[in-house]
Length: 290
Image (tube, rainbow, N blue to C red; front, side, top):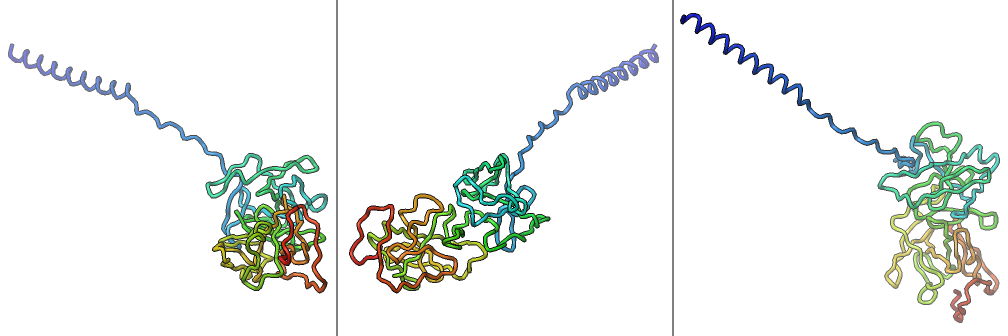
């Protein structure tokens, strides 16, 4: 009788242990670990920045160099590169603008070319590839024919070219810059009401296309406390009569004001100054030259 009772107890304990194990396995199977939620893919940048021997430059998503054409007029909605030029310098189109936090999407735009295709712009300048650049990082198109240049982010000084004016300095958006022949090296003679018509141009630091001499840029401390950028010792100015990029209405004004050409020189005038018609109706002060 005792033996039978002992066997019964052993069997009861064994059954209980087996049942507990099965129940635990069932609970483990019934409560699987939740899988992590998938991460949404972020769209890749369509325009990038690349470090180069020329500093930081704009590239496409694959790192191929982008250029601007000095013969273009920014924000005009057109490109001056057509026909065979467009074969050697293909237009760049980013489609949807997607950039890193170092760039501002608002600085980019698009134009419709005469062939109906779209071309991306930066600060109004149409952007191009160069056919001879075959690898990311190539910059073989820089300074070709003195009119093609790599484009850098927010470069404060650019260059433009027209048949009449040749190569001259502009700001980022293509607005013309000027020299005043009454200035002496490193000093401005334009003060007071002169500055209302000829505002001083200032940029710090200065980055410019490779055709310009980097050491040629300096800063002039004006009497009014404003710092003004100079090139080849000549302070740089805007003209209030220029309404848009490409305007050069101040050229030759009173034979004292000239577009800031890339050489840093100004014409030598041997005849008495004569008034040049302008879009401004502000009376000239006697002997001021502005």
